[in-house]
Length: 254
Ligand code: PEP
Image (cartoon, rainbow, N blue to C red):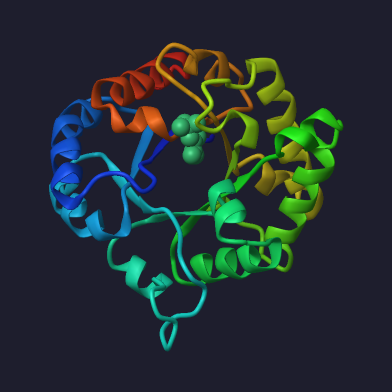
């Protein structure tokens, strides 16, 4: 049984004060929605403040990135040990990290390993770019990203995979429910091939890319899609709560 899951990626938005205000607006309504996991991923500098505000509520916390070393001379980086005191989840391999910060599959693999070794649960993002989609290479690209990121990693249901087509992120042009379903099913097949079918059937797979309260139903109505990774809409408290609520209803979680 996979518990439905909605995570909000705030990206490089909100000062500490703004993050506190945003989480205070949503924590009580989110807490009231049962049977679904909701996780907020604010910027690093707000993790501690947000952690204090969500304490005692049924709302989880994640980071947006992490380095793989535990400590040392890596100016500007954040380690799994540091995150372990603050949060449960970490987003890894987001397409913006791949695009703007040159992250490649081998680096992402080290990060996935380090997160799991240190008790964090990775949300691994994969997805094809617009030209790769046009060329019909979606499965080839995603297969490569998954094999790269999961190479040598022990099978575990602590992994969540987010299918985030790059052409859908922040563009207002979400995939169709059908497109997302086909690729999410493919992702679970690849994980089953790399690990085994039993673990793959317990690994949650999310869709991400221009999800809003109006279209989330298209995705979560699919039995293979366990929820969504939300960017822009996670910065609007009412909309984020609606997304969680709609998902809980459609998944029969409450
Ligand atoms: C994301 O960045 O993970 C994302 C899904 O963004 P958006 O919802 O804004 O498309």
